[in-house]
Length: 294
Image (tube, one colour):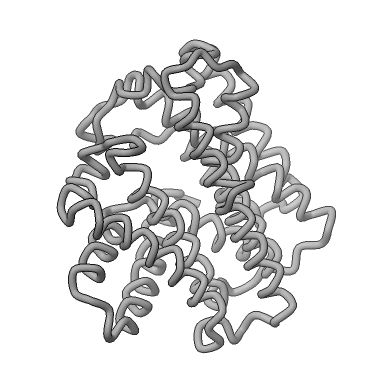
């Protein structure tokens, strides 16, 4: 499988589904809708929804039914980026090569656009017109998975620790907490949700979970590496700005961080070895995340 083609194909699938979702927003105030669309359709990689689709496909299931869930995960991810970029958190001017949401629409609309994307994600997941192909018992499980990953004991908790330890010495345990929660939690949930809808058994789900944990940390380490030595035009945002944050480069050094990244990708591949050829896309995604340039 050529992973570049797979990524392009699935990204188009996700983008088309997101456009259909946005067509249902009939009375949303114009500035709010514009801000939501601006951030959601700003050349994102769509890694999280594609992982959901790939995990479902790995169990032999047609991903069409899970597509709205995959889109909801991307909406949650986008909300988190809008809020991360705000002056009170990371104070970023660029995201994916474009001015950040608050730079274009102002802080108030940016905050509310993030709020709306998060809330609408859960509306989509609970709207039977979108999720009728998923049994209610399964739907309840996956909504819990996503809510837990995105909330106070997941992504938001990690974001808080990231803010609290900015400019402080910190240590490896703090580093691990931040990135296991801020970055890995939603990636792991995206993988698990696809596997659950695909019908993964308990033992198989452990393998999918380990895969999600490994690639989630690998994703963050690569972000840290790119911040240190990436190409700003390719990455699409200001680099060398994380020196006050808790990063793998700070606590492990560049060489050791690259080795850790390679080891995590290998562990991710091993964790889904039980899938055989059905895991080809997931293996390709793990390798891509370990070598990406943006």
